[in-house]
Length: 144
Image 1: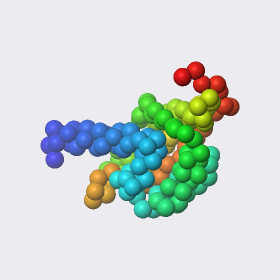
Image 2 (image 1 turned 90 degrees about the vertical axis):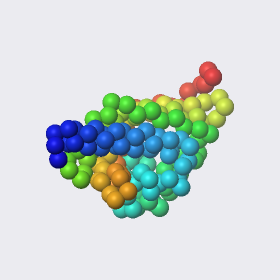
Image 3 (image 1 turned 30 degrees about the horizontal axis):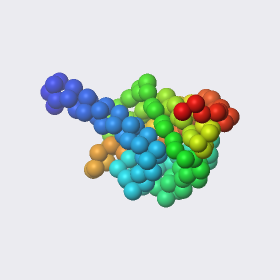
Image 4 (image 1 turned 30 degrees about the vertical axis):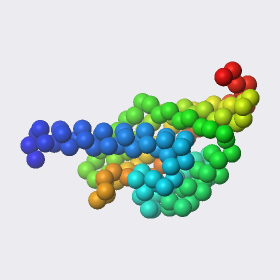
């Protein structure tokens, strides 16, 4: 590959990985579980404060057990650090989440998401995720 082709490939990889991170938030917030295979490999391993999951079915069960209890959630990821190494990559992101408990209360959470990804025949997919909490509030009165 020429240096221009290498640069284009690197930028395309970074854009696709950043898009996966954004889609991960939508996947959780909108319950788009039918799109799981567009984000994760079949053998994905996830570790979070809610537990550990191996495989897509276990991942969906883990996420639903924690998030289906809320009226609504809103995850916002930022400060992405993307490192591509051939056919694998790592992505680190900050995550701020709002958990709407009911029409009067909500809670806020913050943490780090560390993704592992690999290139598949269908594009990049996450094959691991470690969620490290930083902060979680008690229920707060909603002003809106």
